[in-house]
Image (cartoon, rainbow, N blue to C red; front, side, top):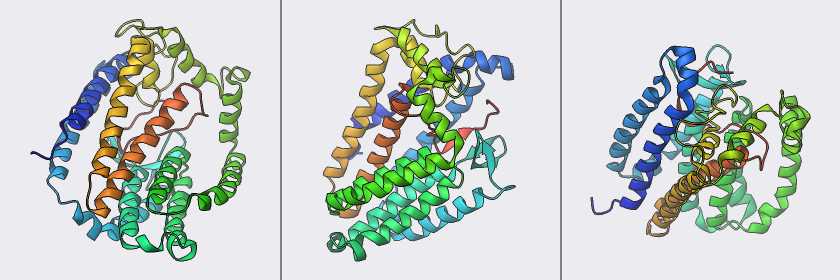
Length: 342
C-alpha cells in the first residue's frame, strides 16, 4: 500500500467519473431516441468502470516481471488475434473497419491489446539487448521488423489511428533505449513517403485530408464532422453553456459520446472544462513518467515509459483531431459497447 501513487490514482478515478458524467450528458438525447433509455450508454460505461477498477486492483497485485517472462507469448497471441479479426465472418465491421470481435452485445478490439503486447515485448527486448541498440543491423532492425509487421496487420483492418499511436510510442521508447536519433531522422523520409502512399491508396483518407484543409468545401460530407465539432468548441467561451446544455449533441455532431466527447465538454464547460481535462491527463502522464524514472529495474523502466507514451500520444491525437489540428482519425479503447450509430 505504501507504494501506491495516490496522485496518479486520484487523477485516474476523477477523470473516469467525470467521463461517466459527460457520457450521460452527451448521449442521453440519442440514447432516448434509439433505445428508449436515456441511461443506456452511461450504464454500460459504468459497468466498464467497475470492471476496470477490479482489473486495476488485480493487476496491481501481480509482479510485473511475469510479463517479461511471457512477453513473446503475449505478442504471438496478439498477432494471431490481428490475423483472425481481419477474416470476414470472424471479425466484425464497425465504422468501416474490420477490427472487432463481437461477444454478445459487446466488442473487443485486439489492436488495442496489441499496443500493450508490443510495449511489453519492446521493454524486454531493450532490457536484453541494451548494448546492441547502437547497431542498426543487429539491434534496431529486428524490433522494427516486428513493429512493421504489427503495423501492417492493423492497417489491413484498416485502423490508421491506432497503428500511428503504436508506432510513435515504440519509436520514442527506442530512442530512450539508446537508438540514435539520426537513424530515425533518415528513415523519417521513408515513413513520410509511406504515409502519403497509404493516404493515396484509400480514397476516404484523401477525403479526410481535403476536409482537414478546407472542411467547408464539403460541409455535408467529409467536412461535416469537424465542422460540427468546431461549432461545439467555438461558442463555449470561458465557462460554457452549462452541464446538459449542449446544442451539438442534438443529432448534429456524430459520435458525441465517444471520439468527439471533448467537443461536448468544451461546449458545456468552456475553456475551464478544457483546462481541467487537459490538467488531469497531464497529471496522469507526468506521474507515469515519474514512476518510470524512479524504477531501478530496466525492464520496469521501459515498460512504464512505453505505457505512458502510448497514453500520451493517444490523448494528444484525439485532442488534435477534435480541434481540427490534424485530419480526422479514429482512436478507440479496448472495450467498447457496440453501436449501430453511423
